[in-house]
Image (cartoon, rainbow, N blue to C red):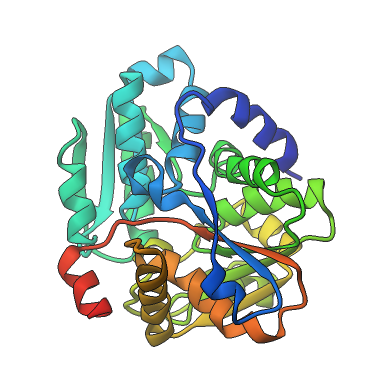
Length: 318
């Protein structure tokens, strides 16, 4: 079994000089509708507008000199690709990024600012990952998974290190879940520091690959529909190492509708004047669903990203 606590500690030493310590801010508007003091962990203010740079740096720094020379390949719905591109530039490593053809335009546009090769692939997230893995194998390059990688999990878990330093008595954490890297790393670290903390995994109803897999006791294929939460959309790679920690660490799963996701995004904009993407709106929506009967004192919500097209966001909040 993966030693997540050790992975996170090692990642903290590797990447600290490369990533921002993001703010943890009170959310009085959310506290007012619950019995908890609520805080927002603003990963939307991280480099590239997403938490993903944590795992990207940790994975890339861990490569050997030969692997760096040969270059890397990754697959992404957008934010992981941006994070890898950013880290590749800082570390001087060549790379290729595979994206779905329906990638959010804002994420695709931002990627074009980096010196990386970009390939658009038809199909869902699993199709993109499979194509990228095959390409890396044929080219002798290293494949960096968005989630199915111990170094990615460790890097994302440094969110937990910061949370523990910023507020030791957090007893509930809301985290959006796609492939499960962030909830595995952050939840694994915080459970070690406080075994009583409650981890709530948050998903869009249109993409519930991890919770349905946990329910089934194995990774299963589920129908994936269009969702505002493009950052968490898609299936899970077979035999992903995130399945076990998601099964063990997540105490409760909450899935929210597209209407609720939009309301979560509007809530943060209206009360905090922050633009957040759909995957971040998911955790706010999940909290709003659970606020009145949540038996905890201090809850934190990971606001995981800010990358959304301006026109789409304006239409949602107007």
